[in-house]
Structure formats: structure tokens, C-alpha cells
Image (spheres, rainbow, N blue to C red):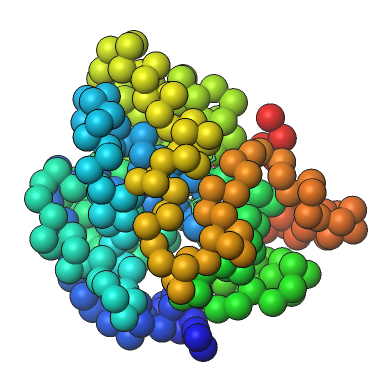
Amino acid sequence: MDVQLKQLNGVPLTKPIADQWERVEEFKARPDDLLIATYPKAGTTWMQEIVDSIMNDGELEKNKRAPTHVRSPFLEMLTFVSSGVDVLNNTPSPRLVKTHLPSELVPKSFWEQKCKTIYVARNAKDTLSYYFFDLMNKIQPDPGTWEQYMEKFLKGEVAWGNWFDHVSGWWNAKDKHEILYVFYEDIKKDTKREIRKVMKFQKNLSEEALDKICHHTSFKAMKENPMANYSTIPNMLLDQTVSPFMRKGEVADWKNHFTESQSKMFDEEYEERMKGTDLKFRTNI
Ligand code: A3P
């Protein structure tokens, strides 16, 4: 498949999304929508499972009702088989909405309706798990080599654009809207504490429910769960024989892929680009 990206206000998106942008822009959010926003590969699916578990009061049987992309539709996604906007318009409230949009492209009705939003951020080096995803994802452009991909990533020439602008744009947005900003590394390091934080933001549940949710949303449990591991998506779209969706689930896996000189070059560029922000990431835990 020849997949192209097209710029929308300086942000590269897959062409079908950019071509029919008005439908996303005019999307009508509802006040009880909960928005999960991330840069791709930051732990979106993990947070979707956590939030759905809380929404179901820890009655985890209910999470088995459908795969992730049905329980928590992907707002801007548009392919020849489905449209996130159409799916969401037909989804009863309360809705869990997924987006990868940078904060400035989020449909304004989410802010007008004061929807709660959870943003998950992951350190840039591990976010390059995006390379392995683009290798298996047939609806995004071919990533080329690891070296070429790293260059495109740093220039923001991958789908959903520039990581630096994304994480810092949302970091600034959290002071204006009801946004819980969490880090993949923190969830990995102290899952209970971070899920408790999400509960406080979304809905308080018992310690017993918290324990069950921690277990249900562990990497191992999600990897084996057909309703969370994207195995219901056909191989012609996501080819898990190339790379599994639930790939490693670790902090610092980047060390297995960056050469020493790539890491040094990346760190220099990173320092330069993150100069103006107090946003701090950990590349180790
Ligand atoms: P890796 O490719 O580094 O393994 P997204 O859902 O935003 O596309 O992010 C996918 C990344 O989150 C993948 O990272 C995936 O393995 C990881 N992930 C998914 N569920 C996880 C979990 N329960 N615990 C830890 N990592 C998880």
C-alpha cells in the first residue's frame, strides 16, 4: 500500500485524515466524554484499559465486551474500513475517546464541554518504539531504516508530527484545562500509585478494585488478552507477524536499539529542543 502523509497546520497526518479534517474539527464532544490523548506509542492502549476498568467499577468481565478500539474509539482515525467520528457518534455515553492529536488540533468542543482529559507522555527514546509499529502498521508509511526513521522522528516527519511540540504543547495545555498529565515511566515504576491518581481524577474505587485493575492491566495480562492486544485487527492492517503490538512494555528498551553515537546525537538535539520547558522525562527507572 502506498501510504502518504499530508500536512495539516504543519502537522503531518495520514492523507485520509487530513483530507476530511472538517469532520474531526466539527466533532461534538459531550460533557461526560473522557479523552485519552497521547503521542503514538506512549502507552495509549495501557491507559485505555486502565480507564475502562475504572469506568466499569473494577468489574473486569465488562472489559471483555469488545476490543480496545471499540471500547475507546480513535477520534481522528479514518481508513477505507472505518471512521472514528462515525463510530463515536454512534457510541452511547459515557464515551472514552482516544486521540493522538496535538493539543492545538483537538476539536474545540472538548474544551467547551470541559471534558476530562488524560495525557500520557513517554520519554522520546523509548517512543521510538514507533519504528517497530510503523514496520507492522500497513496504514502508515514504511519507516525505512532505523537510522532514517530516527532522523524523520527528530524532524517531526512522522504521522502526528513532532514529539517535542506534542509533549510540551500538552504540558502547557494542562494549566488551562482539566488535564491529568502522567508519564509512562511512572506507571511502570509505581503502577498502583499512578492508577490511584487516575482514580482520583476519574472515579474513586476500593483498594480491592485497585489491586484487580493493576493485575488486569499488567503487560503480561494485556499481551494475552485478545480484547487488549489488537489481535482482532486483520494482518493486512496490523501485521503482528512482523512485530507484536505488545512488543516489550519496558522502560529503557531504547538501549537495545540506539548505537552509542546515535544516543549522543539524539541527546544533543534533545537538549536543544527541550531548552524552553520545565518538562522532565526519565529514560531509565
Ligand atoms: P513497546 O513497543 O515499547 O513495547 P500505544 O498504545 O500508545 O501504541 O503504545 C504501545 C506501547 O505501550 C508498546 O511499547 C506496548 O508494548 C506498551 N504497552 C502496552 N500495554 C502495556 C502495559 N500494560 N504495560 C507496559 N507497556 C505497555
